Image (cartoon, rainbow over all chains, first blue to last red; front, side, top):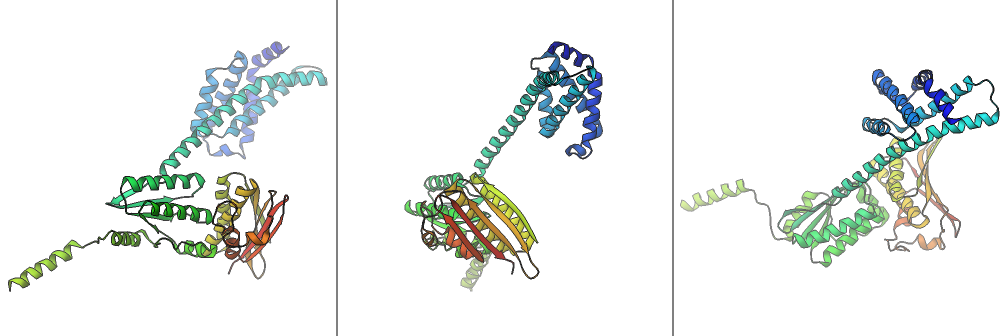
Length: 288
Length: 133
C-alpha cells in the first residue's frame, strides 16, 4: 500500500506541486516573506517542492535537502517558511490522495494520513535540526565574542592601568573581571587601576558588590583602585540603595580619575609649549 | 487605563530582559533619566532575588494612567521558599547569600510604594509603584 501511494503521488507530482504552490502563494499575502522578491520566492518554492519530491522518491536522506536548508539559512529565511511549507504539502497531498479514491472510511483515512506523515516527518525533523544547529553555533560564537570583549585591561602608562567595562555584568563576567584585574595588576606592575563603568547600564547591589570585592582584592595586592565614570543617575541610585563606596576613591570621569592616578604615582602632566616659553624668558632674563 | 505585560525569570539573562522592558515602559511614561535608572535598578534587584532564591518567577508591569497621575506598577512574584522573617530582610546589611544586603530596603527607597507579601513555602510577591513627577 505505501508503495502504491508513493507511486500515485510521484506520478501526479505536477498536480500536487501546483496545488502546493497555489496554497503557499496565497498564504504569503500577509506574511513575513513579503520583503522577498517575487522571482526569488518562486524559484525557492520550486526548488523546495523538488527537494521534497526527491526525498520522497529516494526514501533515504539526500544531500539536496542539506544544501537547500543551508542556502535558506544563509539567506536568513525563517524556519516557519519550511515548517509551513511542509505542513501545506502534507495537507495538499492527503487531499489529493483522498480525491483519487472513491470511498474512504476512517481506517483508510488514518492509514493514508500515517503514510504521508511518515514522508513528511523526517524532512521536518532534519530541517529543524539543521536550523537549530546553526542557531546554536551562532549563539556559542557570540558568547565567545562577548567573552573576548568582556574585561580588557589596558596599561596606559607605567604603573597605571585602565579597565573599561561595557555592558551588563553577570556573575560569569564578574568572575572574569576579578581574575583579569588581579592578573593584570601583577603583570603590568600597576600601582593604580582605574575601573571605568561609563558603559555599564545598571549598577545594582550585585554589580556594586562585585566592584567592591574587586577593589578590595586589588588593595590586598598593594595597588589602589579608582572607580570612574559614575554618571549622575547612577550616583543617585547608589545612594538610594545605600551602598557604601567610601572605601576607595571614585570620580565622575576617566579624565579626573587619571589625574588622581598621576598624583598618586607622583607625576603630573606638563604642557611643553608653556614650559619652553617660560624657559626662554628665564634665559633671556638671566642674560640681561 | 492599565496596560499589562510581564517577563518570566528563569535564567540570569532574563534579568536583563526584565529591566530592559521596565526601562522602555518608564521611557514611554515620561520618567526622567534618574527615575528610569531607579526603576531599572529596582527591577534588577527584584528579578535577581527571584533568580537567586526562587529559581523562577515573573516580573509584571502595569502602566497606570489616571486622570491626575501616571505611574508604573511592578509586581515581582515567585513560588519559591518564601521569606521567614520579613522585618529582617528589610534591614540594611542583612543577606543570606553573602551579598551586600541592600537589595530589598534599597528597592523600597528607590520606589514610591512598596509592599511585600510572603508565606514560607508558598512564595513571595512584591508590589512597587513609581509615580511620574
